Amino acid sequence: MKQAKIQEVRAYVIAANEMGADYHNQKGSHWIIDLPIANPMSVYEEYKAERTSWGINALGTVVVQVELTDGTIGIGCSIGGEPACYIIEKHLSRFVEGQDPRNVELIWDQMWRATMPYGRKGLTVQAISAVDLAIWDCLGKLRDEPVYALIGGKTKERLPVYATTSRPDVAQQWGFHGAKIPCRYGPGDGREGLKKNVEVMAEARAQVGPDFPIRLDCYMALTVPYAIQLAKALAPYDLLWIEECLPPDDYDGYAALKSALTGTCLVTTGEHEYTRYGFRELIARKCADILQPDINWVGGLTEARRIVAMAAAYDIPVIPHGSSVFSYHMQYAFSNCPIAEFLVMSPKADELVPLFGELFTNEPIPKDGYLELPDAPGWGVELNQNLELVRPYENSRREAVATS
Ligand SMILES: [Mg+2]
Image (cartoon, rainbow, N blue to C red; front, top):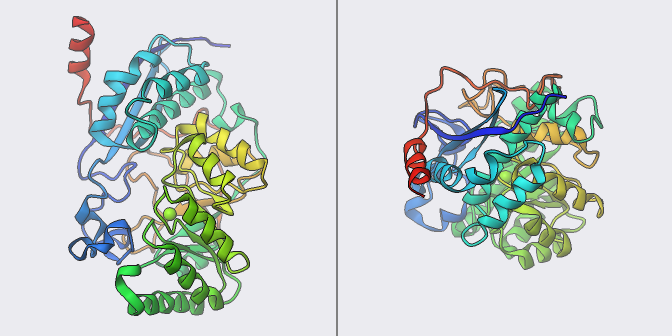
């Protein structure tokens, strides 16, 4: 087997008009920013209309390259933009460079422990995720194996996929295994908003008929009483699951919600939860029927597989949020990851395009409701060489190293 050490870790931002790993970074008309979508800021009238108005895309994408001494280059990405580059280049790099790339657990643990004084959730863990994913890509390339084969092999030949979209009718024509639509109005919109939410669901159900599963994504916007009222009002339309109704820290609220909605619909959450510690809370407090870690945010594959293992002990399915190839590989490898999410990122939701935009040249896209991964090494995706990458802390890191 080929052996090599990690030579260098490099963190980049991409041009401001590129989407990359930050799919809210859309210019012009696009359903994901144009539709009213209830969110934590929609309690403020001036920020209600568009999520970009309060800066949902303020940080943007971070792209990480990990280069080995034999020239192998692995790619990872997350959101976090320039602040994530700072953390990676100025802090995390010391635990990565010079290491044996096979030591994923050791590298992860050192990045995690060293960032504990300021990290533990959010941006810092997103930065760790991007580095971790790039190391796994290196490992796969070093061994000439796809990542799923490194972590246990295939539990399924192809992945069933559901579509997150504003057009469930189109998703149905494409053969997806159901759809997920955004919840448009929250508690601040009163009874009128609740009525409109029900109308949207009624229309979606009328479009797709009785047998097509429909899910509702509430993006941390609701309260416990509102979520219970909404889910019960939507029950006649056979809602499969209600997603991320509450702020991620409200574990007691999620437990109350799941208990109240048993028999009505499934309660799901986790896309803005971090690490095994966060998911341990969700599991121990019986907060959700399905867990939805985002592999690009939760701590990378190294941490996500621990969450999948924990969930397996409670028979809780893990259906990761977005994250494209990075989650597909994990889902291939574990039997309690039954179905994948695909975000329909074309402006009118009438065309299938890569989740990460122009970032990769060959990001796999589902066909007829299934995703098939190629047998290519690593994550199997190539960085688009035409993309303008900027490495903001290249020089300042070197100066800091030289003077220390
Ligand atoms: Mg969601």
